[in-house]
Image (cartoon, rainbow, N blue to C red):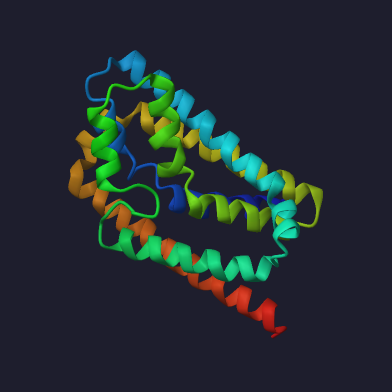
Length: 213
């Protein structure tokens, strides 16, 4: 039981750093600036559900994708580590990773007239929160989790991240008032530091597995 709890905490912490829901607060507020609190809560709910569905689907079909394209988990780990490292470098500079969403895309969605469903799914859920980094991570963890309890732990961590995203987005106004833009950038840098170590370790594990070290 303790083993699975540790596994859950490690994966949850890693996913929290990758998805960085606190860093998504300014974007959430910018694309929902003219909406009521009830509409914002509705968007937060739909976003969190979309995040969970996206990550669960890719976690479940990840092994099939590896087999279909003839790619090993070690090769994917190296590629995923490089991707996460790029994201981490941008986060360490206090920027929102362009691997997820660019400034132009954020401005485009804040200016266009879109439905609540469109805003919740794109750009908030995909690719801002459940972007390539998060998808790569859950696919790798699920593929390397041989035991069913470990696979269920991966799914549980995804659900926990979805709940966390919902709580943070619903409290976005308070978070921005308390932390301010500077505080959010500091949090983003901290998440970037954690993500850097994860990326390097992922690359090391992939190289070891690929060359049988």
